[in-house]
Image 1 (cartoon, rainbow, N blue to C red):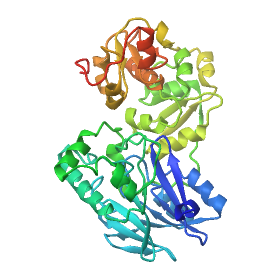
Image 2 (image 1 turned 30 degrees about the vertical axis):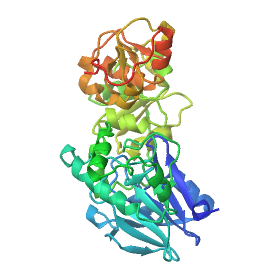
Image 3 (image 1 turned 180 degrees about the vertical axis):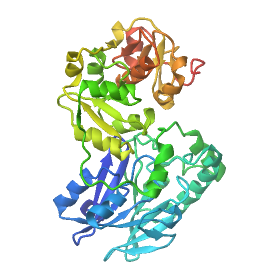
Length: 459
């Protein structure tokens, strides 16, 4: 049993692909690192272990979630630790390179590791002179390094070169030092697939392909070439985190709305999000509603596809957890939650209002139609139906006109494809079919083999 086994509790957000950490100091106090505004899991672990969060440390100005540090300062009196270079507009202890915080037997040392962001810090945990581990945030991550294009294309290479120097600094630590990153598999901050979320300096020196680059230029090229798209809301959350998210005094409500109120909200420019499973949406939905099934990735697609400036109403199923909708929305800055349709689609229909349906069919019933693949570019390149048109789901609101009429809309399983179909229907497309499955099933049913790489069919 090592130090981390006894004292470090990772709190994994599967939807965002991130890890926060609760560090048990052994005296009833704890340090929280890179926590989001959704503090339910952290509070549950702290209560279970009898801990009070005394410090809340942020490695950087997060773009993919609202930080929970300000909320912890309010809830527990935690001292917020963050980079002085971040110029945060709320009470915190500003740290520069080399600054140390006495944790009562342990020490937290700030290491400047810019690249993912300008003001990025890593936090080295020391027991006397011995380094136990390092919270690397969006610097060194398992088998990669976090993206460097969040501050604009014109700064991507500059920040990639800073990332190179930061990784050189981190890998100068002893091989046995544990590495505790924030971004992990599933994160749009450029983490590769994989199940490991923590590692060691030595393991990364052996296995991280970016660290195998023979020189800085090669590192920069490899890192920049690996960057895919990222959700639209990333462009606004760092500034909200700099100012400080609004403190919540309790669990935000999701009031019941009548069918009439939902209809009025839509007429006045609000949006309806149908959070039911894709099959339920397909069987009958409010015309103009956007399908975003409630699952781990709900916050990502809400933040990518809809504005945070208009009120949102939700259509839900009887057994869905309304608090999950609320917290996923709030952790990415969506606070204008008007409520949910009381009674669901039954209430909508009883009120005499129209509904639409969308065919949701298995591969052997999909027929021969234009095939629209809405997965990420990396997924498409790894294997796709020959002749498929590729438009990422995140690009679809701006490119609905590029979608072929009467298409089969497809992703890997069907959830993103149903979201895509709902966006296309809002843009006036009709006669769409959504594939209940993915490219493997479709190719098999139609006697084809998957193609790899890019094709001329990607506009």
